[in-house]
Length: 226
Image (cartoon, rainbow, N blue to C red):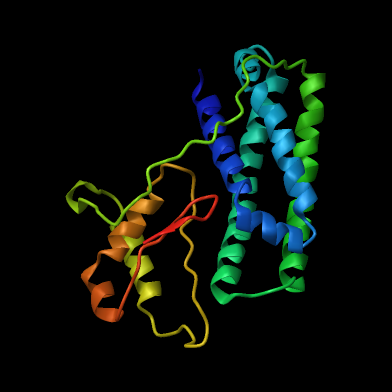
């Protein structure tokens, strides 16, 4: 199995998981974009099923290699757009905001349309390239271990600059007292987002700056643990 297929399989699973978020679905519905996001899941399922075949054929057919490259580019862009939805959903949840925000819709609707167009184009090429489904690769929903605040920092490398930037944002006095600031940490699964959050959470400067703090792990069905 080629590296590009491993990567694509991993990021597609991440995208599936994010699209399953209850709050993301609620936000998309309020903005009238839920139909397109549902379509994303449907088309991704079709694409995911032919990845094995595409990987086998890419060395013999340039068009298949280009299809995989285009899919990789789209996966990056799709993940970025979904993260924008997730951040807005989190902000509204914290602020208890209700109703549609036209500004957010105007910003996101063109991005969603563009992703949908590119996704449909890749789907149409499946038949043209004669890619066939091999083994069903729909991601199964698993219950992962909920991360805690426990962390052995002596085994964490290469995150000091990221930690420093986050602390600068978190401990600044620029945020308005009557608003809730949201600092998103985004990226593919496995790149260390939770570890970075743990490092910041456990930092002595955070303990001194805030009167109280809490760690909450939020799953797709939003069972909150403290």
